[in-house]
Length: 121
Image (cartoon, rainbow, N blue to C red):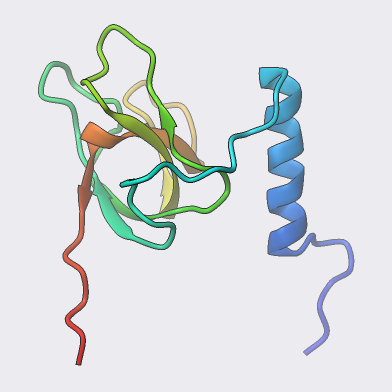
């Protein structure tokens, strides 16, 4: 099977995404993983908010992405110690406003329910 040279690899796409966000944010994405944070590769379910409808149209599954390190949330609605994680979605998703589809997003920890760890054996 020959790959199409016009289609970027996963690593090239991630590098392009990081560069685009660096340009928008005016700073590089964090790369130091905080102590106690869930690990990249952990499976999660993205859930709604108890206080309002949203932020997504439905609950769905994804994976914590190593795209950038989790970061503390500085917002009045954030819960103490809440981190925001980059989540790669299993399928493209739409937000509650109908925008999307998104394949990845920065999601607050209290919108994430970690899937059970697989049993070792």
